Amino acid sequence: MDVISAFIARYVKEFDFYDQAARLVKERLESSLQRSGVRCMVTSRAKDPSRLEEKCRIRSSDRKYASADDIFDDIADLAGVRVALYFPAEKNQVDSAVRNLFHLVEERRDFPRRDVTLSGKRFSGYSASHYRVRLNENLLTGSQKRYALARVEIQVASVLMHAWSEVEHDLVYKPFEGELSEDEYAILDQLNGMVLAGELALETLQRAGERRVAEVGRKFLNHYELTVHLLDQVNSLVDKPVGEAGLGRIDLLFILLSRLGIDTPANLASYLAALHGNLEERPLADQVIDAVLERDESRFKTYQHIQEEDALRAIGSEHNDDAFMWAGLFMARWAELEGLLFSLLDDDQQRLTGVPAFRLLQLMEGRGILDPSTVREIDLLRQMRNRVAHRIGSDSPSKATLQEAVGRIESIIAEIGTPSPDDA
Image (cartoon, rainbow, N blue to C red; front, side, top):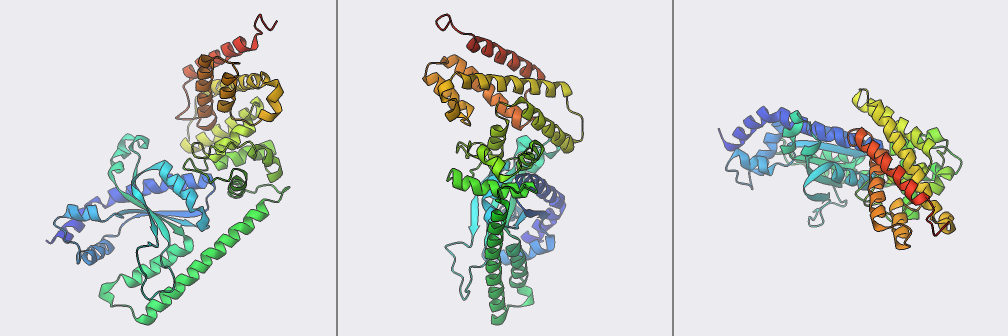
């Protein structure tokens, strides 16, 4: 048995391992993109053994494989995931999701490669981004942890480009069926030009959708439309693209805006104006939700109920109602504390509306209104507030932690809300 045959025999035995690893990557990525409002189709597969053997024998002409392990190291896409985008311009959002969800084995590869000359072609050929990743072992259950060893290739391109690449690949890389004629290559090149023109049409279609969604009095019909509007507004308001933190749970933001009756571009405008540009570190949806919930206990209760519904859908089981009660009480006390902090800066209150809490704390420490130890304690409570507001569920603080935090907030309110003898 030659090296390639030995490799294929071993791969067939391990096929289910690669297939399941690809499926896990697909499920995580698809869920994240859907929640973020990115329109796409996500598929996964383990490489077909017969096609894999063809690929290995072609590559063996210029690669000397000494063992099956050499081939495993060389073939990067034994487990593969494809993201077919409706709108090519949303590649940046996919990039953020991939970097947040997985461990990158190597840096992204973009096609067409600048160092490759396409002889005899008028058009640029295959246009896509490829990632080689591994699952984050810390996010896998005990029985799934072994899949963190698998290297998975994620291919991101438009729906049109994926279709063309399938046709091109099956025709060009079939040496046993004969070399394509000059006319066949020319037709493939023409089809590539049509695909590139189609991508330009998709970008025009996306911009037309952005203009339609931006109509002031029109309600957002779904979270996909909300995503389009948010991205358009971020570009004009903060002149900075959404960073690696990504879009976040746009789906939950959409439900919140709908239930509060503020689901139009006009109603959303004032909350978007409060964005502080820290788009690299915190998801866009989290920042908008913070602005909507700011110092309003009733709105937080609405959002908390939305999160409970989402958690129940996700895991299909009951949550600890007592813990949720303490989370609600914690957020109510935090809103009270935040309002008190703003009231201590009466002369600046209007100007400071929408300023993030951590900057408010820096300002109050700088003016000597709060001592450094109190600022540090409030900042820790602020970080807990972000965990509670945006990740109720497995990452939320325990009931005991929430009870202790509520007590600390009440003590701080009593301390800074009581006039000193000098003020009396």
